[in-house]
Amino acid sequence: MSGTSMAVTIVTGTAALLLEHNPDWIPDDMKTQLMSSTMDLGFMADEQGAGEVN
Figure 1 (cartoon, rainbow, N blue to C red):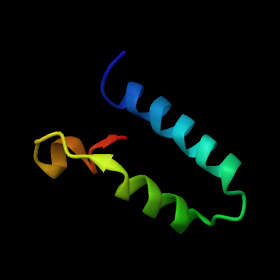
Figure 2 (figure 1 turned 180 degrees about the vertical axis):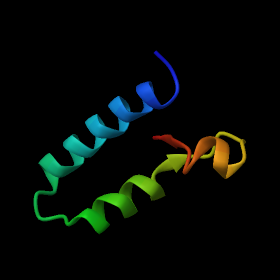
Figure 3 (figure 1 turned 90 degrees about the horizontal axis):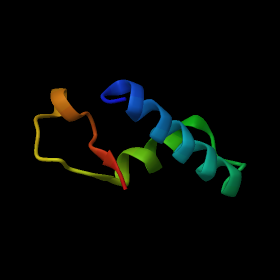
C-alpha cells in the first residue's frame, strides 16, 4: 500500500488519537495541529501536501 491509500490511514489514526486527548477541539483546531506538526519531505507542495505526520 502506498500513496494516498497509506496516508489516509496514518492521518486518520493520528486524528483519532488527538481527538481522544482533546475532545473539545473543533475541526479547525484539528487541522491546525495536523498541519503544523508535519515534516517537510523536500518535495513541492503539490507532491507532498503539508508533509509527513510527525
